[in-house]
Every structure is written in structure tokens, then in C-alpha cells.
Image (cartoon, rainbow, N blue to C red; front, side):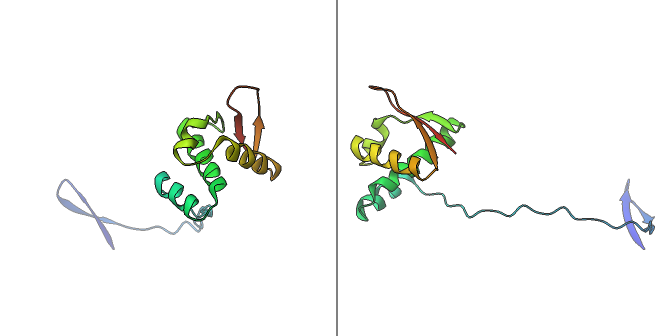
Length: 116
């Protein structure tokens, strides 16, 4: 017999069998996730000479920061991470070709990126 306490007194609780089964909701499979400080990522990209990878990391950060999958990608932030505008252009072109992003370019303006 199980008991519950109400107003300081134990109350006997009887469990009834209704014949119904309890179904458990399926848990969604969690994807692996890593939180990486951006300055560490920039140092790692420079050390391994894969500076274009820093563009992808910065794109994911901008998506999180803006809470939107479409956003501007100015040169300033990437420049602080050691990415030149030419490397940014090459990385965006390669990411677009792989189907990870869509890029809208306007002459003289920062590109608008949509993460797909």
C-alpha cells in the first residue's frame, strides 16, 4: 500500500489496474553539439591553415545571434578572425556550391546569406 501526506497525516492510496498500457513518448535523437569560443576557433583555423572553416563557424554564430537563418555577412567581424574578404568570397562560393547556404550578392554591399 502506498501513502500520501495531506495536512500532516498519511493517507492510504490504492492503485487500480485499468488494463490500459502506458505508452512512452519517443525521444528525439540528439545531434552532437560543441560550444567553442570564437577566438579559439580563429586560432585553430590559423594554425591548421583552414581559414575558410572560420567563415562557416562565423556564419553559424551569426545565425544564432540574429535568431534568423538569413542575415548580412560583413567583412569586419571576419577580418578580426583573420579572414580576408577574398577568403570570405571563396568560402561563401564553396559553401553555396555544396548546398549548405544560399547567397544573395549586391555590388558594393555585404552579401545576404541564408543557411539551408
